[in-house]
Amino acid sequence: MDEKLNVLLVSDDEVIHHQILNSLSGNYPIQLINPGEVAREINRNAQDIVIFVQPATDTASETIQYIKSSSPSTLVIFIAKGSDFMLLRNITKAGASDFFVYPDEHGLFISRFPTIYQNYEIQKLKREDSVSVFAGGGGQILSLFSGNGGTGKSLLSTSLAQTIKLESTAEVILIDLNLQFGGIETLLSIESNRSIADLTPVINELNESHIRNVSQRVESSKLEVLISPCDAEVAETITEEFVAKLLRTCRRSFDFVIVDLPHYLNRNVVTVLEESDHIYYVLNPNTPSLRLLKQFEELSLRLGIDLKSRTSVILNKVSKENEIQEKDLSNTLRFPIEASIRLDQKGTQPFINKGVPIRSAKKEKRLIPFAKDIRKWSLSVLK
Image (tube, rainbow, N blue to C red; front, side):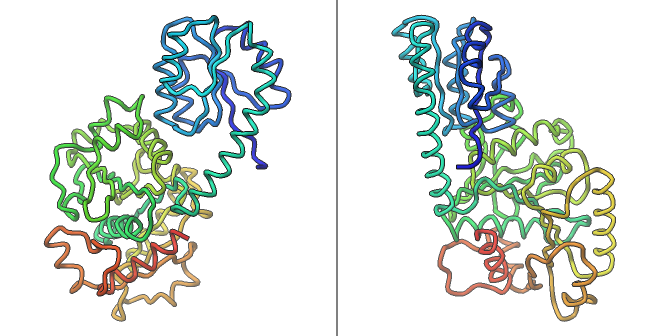
């Protein structure tokens, strides 16, 4: 493995952490923080190994438990300031893998750390290989955006998420960030009082368990869905910091995070676009839509959002009657066309009216044209 592991040293004891840094930092890149900064740092960056020095306050078990709940694969090494059987039991129960007593076992810790590091490297490589075979997602955030309403973006988001879930064993979550009016709950016949807004009280300690307690599950596919509060007043309480923490936690917990965005730019939308691994711009093949795409490109450039390397176009409602055909766009669009979705009002309207997913089983014999195009797109995403 060419890439160095992320090693975090958590300590408020200068004597101990100076000795550790003097012994290890020459061979390993180690970041030092105090215990009060753990939540922020874990939310910001995934950590491979955490060396946790017993703090002055009695918060070690809770903090380690938080680290493991936020990032189950993180290896926690605990450095105690004395032999204490009850502490050892609590720390082990919280999720620590190794336990050393300072100063008696300081030399033992330093001598064993290279082996611990190397073993973690091997296990991480095995996990990455198994994840790529298992799902192919790798914690990708895929956002769907369009500069104008009525493009069919929410139906595309719902269908893409449902199809990826049915066509693979990936863990998928669909997030509706149309906070004022929603829409996805109607397409999936979801009736619930729980929404994204219910995560606000726990956003600083957010983990997968919190998300799954609030999300709704589509029974036919086991797709997880975070629905909108559908309330303009509540929407005002959702900040860009909230959105960033939500996406980063979802990235660690799911293979694919699919975000349905509103058709305007605000701070929350900009945050999602910046966090996204890929942006799908939904375009109807007509002149007004092309003009709005150009405006979106220009505004994104002024805002400093990098689109070029991670944006592609989804042509939706494609038919022979369109004023602009796909072949006419090859020299016009700045971004590649990822998929073309046929106009299929006759096929899709019954599903929309009933509020049921267009795909509901893994192996369906008869797919409508819209579903066939979505399946082709989803398979390219999985690859």
